[in-house]
Amino acid sequence: MSYKVVHYINQFFANIGGEEMAHVAPELRDGAVGPGTALNAQWKGEAEIVKTIVCGDSYFAEHEKEAKEQVIAWVKAEKPDFFIAGPAFNAGRYGYACANVAIAVQELGIPVLTGMYVENPGADYKDKVMIVSTRDSAAGMRQAAPTMAKLAMKIMKGEKIGASVEEGYMNMGVRVNMFEEERGAKRAVDMLINKLNDKPFVTEYPMPSFDRVAPNKAVKDLSKATIALCTSGGIVPKGNPDHIESSSASHYGEYSIAGVQALDEAGWETAHGGYDPIYANANPNRVLPVDVLRDMEKEGLIGKLHDKFYTTVGNGTAVASAKKFAAEYAQKLVADGVDAVIMTST
Amino acid sequence: MVKEIERAGLPVVHMCTVTPISMTVGANRIVPTIAIPHPLGNPALDAAEEKKLRRGLVEKALKALTTEVEDQTIFED
Image 1: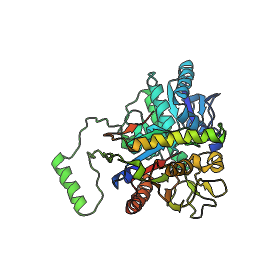
Image 2: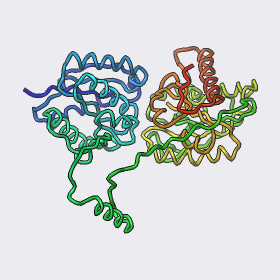
Image 3: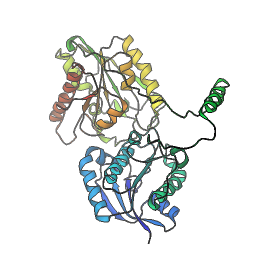
Image 4: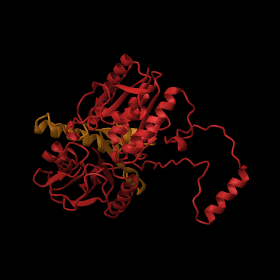
């Protein structure tokens, strides 16, 4: 008898549709769907996906509690030997959903596994759930499927799981005792010599990175403050003159809203390819609230709405790029005498 | 991006729907919004009602900017 596996995927991998279908509620299907067939093929009958749960990424993000309850109910009814979610690659909401359903199922005592790209926001849960490290796009399925299938099979069989670097999952912060051939002093000196010679070396104890920035002081008097708007929601002048990419943006845009009372459909749109654009295109103030800030400026509630805004597309955009964009335009905001910023995200 | 703005010395409020992601990216002042494709709107409402909803959210964001915080804070109400 083969092991029973339940698989969780999103609307895209179930072939329901892209962003325009991201709102779909969870659905239970028999057998393997999409990437599940690749996993099944790897297991060669030793394990089999008996049910596939499909859920829209926006549905999960906006109804997390209900979605999780539904997934749990179906998993409980099926009593599988294993649960797999994804892989989600660099799809942010999908990765977040995969990590969270996997954690919920794990709490039932069922072993779980998911997979995603290291910069996916869902990868933040890597110390709570086992996450296979994948490439940043679905083109990485060919490598991800065998890694995930192999690791899942080891877990199902109760075999010993090797270190994260050997098995391909993200470091979960669990240390295991082992014997090294070389003594510590020699390893340290070898590392130092490599470092001095600009040769690669691998630390045995990476320092934790706590990249947190402490909050700045609050604005004292709004009626004298200049407030700037920024967004990762991709709002741009109609026609996207600077060609900001719909995903993996390589740059940001700086646009004037001097004299603009409200954003309208004729003049503005979104360049973002990671959410259904119809609502933002019909009324761009739904993402960048120029209209109400203008009203507040007129009423004297705020001193001024800054006459430029900064925008990019936060869809699969590398963290390093986003950091670089904002570090650059933040200096411009400071130089222009802006007092505080409202950042909107979709 | 919020972290870089904060690093430059400006208080910043992050308005977004998936607040756990905002927590992981390190925003300090967070205001939850309506939905991913229309964070500051609701197409089911008529135009005047919708603008009122948006105004309420922006007022909440401004309130967050005028509130001293010591740590990451989600401004629910």
